[in-house]
Image (cartoon, rainbow, N blue to C red):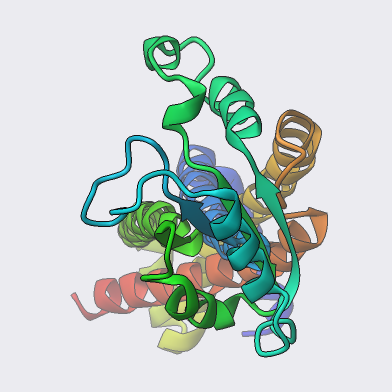
Length: 304
């Protein structure tokens, strides 16, 4: 049997089983769109993690009027203590690690607190003197934050030293869990797609059982009998994969770059290059999935 005959049979099968072909296209489109979106989410979490970790600072909270006595037995940090902390930050042992630092007094801390909790009732009950004066330290390498923490933990007049990455870790752990859950759902959807493609191909083969019988009588091998059905599955899945790739690129271009970037310009988002990188992977997954599911289904049918 020549290749042209195989292609003609595949095209004929696609025309005669439009409903089945559409079902394969739709399920492949939906499942791979979800896979692509889950991949984008994973990439976004990684990108945001790198972006914010590089900007994370170490906060040196000075004792305030309401600090616990065990941490601040001398009470609120005096001007001498502030000068001692600043002198320590300017010492030659620490300057190689510090990019810059700045001091936030009660007034500045109060303004930032009111902006952060605007509309929240808690903002009404907090006074300026209840908020810690703070030295914010930006490091050249965030991985060296332990040096600052060890230097100022237990330092006179310092209530607490906190690396902002400890807050980020909690957020990113939740985001990672969400992205992994999305990937898990995506894998289940791919499995469901494979089952649907397999079932559709077997139904197609059953509807053409007389033709298959005639092909066997004239000496056609199982390979050439199977090939048109496999091509049908691949063609339908490829269309669905291309649509899914287009949907992922549209999500990046119009939702992420066109909406999220404008609403949240203070962070980094995945770009069009990331969507384009996922596109061929989705097409490849769709083609391989369809080839395996179709080939397995028709081989099992021919053994019946």
